[in-house]
Length: 387
Picture 1 (cartoon, rainbow, N blue to C red):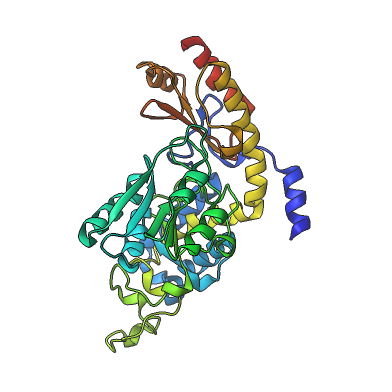
Picture 2: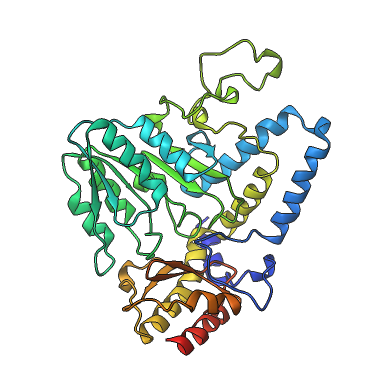
């Protein structure tokens, strides 16, 4: 395996040929939503067509597709296949975590400043119901979220909820260090890796989160409304967010479905979303995961980090603020304006078919395996004219 990764790191190049991105389009916006590969689209069309002939859908189709998706995801994160379940969104997965973690009056839930809402609202509701307190960690000037977060974790901390990178600024966290600090204080760790999984190395063995969720339509090159949850073995006897029939033991025997079963599927199976067999979305998601695993997160990170560094250097030359290099992620970077962002900027970029995201007074630029230096040059040729 090590030899394969080393070879991949040396040879991985821009994979734009696998996508339907026209030459005149500069798409630096994977953190918003990624394109799927051309082959994934073909697979998706074939999958949609199966609904035209439902008599050809077998019991095995109900079982094999979700099982395969969970198996590939478990390989990506270093988990066992039965530790992973399918969910439709990050918020669904955070909801499962909130339902299954203990919280007492006076305890604290730690969040990052300007964290994505799906990983904030459930904790606000939970804290209010339990008489607990939400503690928001202020953004450090240099981007070192790890130190700021770890310093705030104490004996009164019940839950720490964060990501691997900040979704606006792209500053990364050392989740191994965060995980150790959380466990030392007897707290729980809930991770939303929607903005990093697949392009940054991550292992549940190293971090040991209680729950990890990720939506699949961004960096995982998958469809919308399809995602994943990792549930640590210590929580696998918990309460699911819904009671769907396929989560019960023996449900693959369709002839015995009215022989109602009190027992759930083993592992994380009880947490699967209803209709997890999704015959249309699963094949697209599986293809994206298979391709990502064949490249490897290390190789992808090595490739996109060169683009991100070029973006950072160009941004600093224009007087924009970026996180210190030591704390920047490889694939997502926030370019913050010292004064107010020009109102016409988003419109001008879109007219020139250059796509990034505007978040407050920050321009978020996110490159994936289909981007190259030409894309970066296109972006900054326009920025230099306007700034």
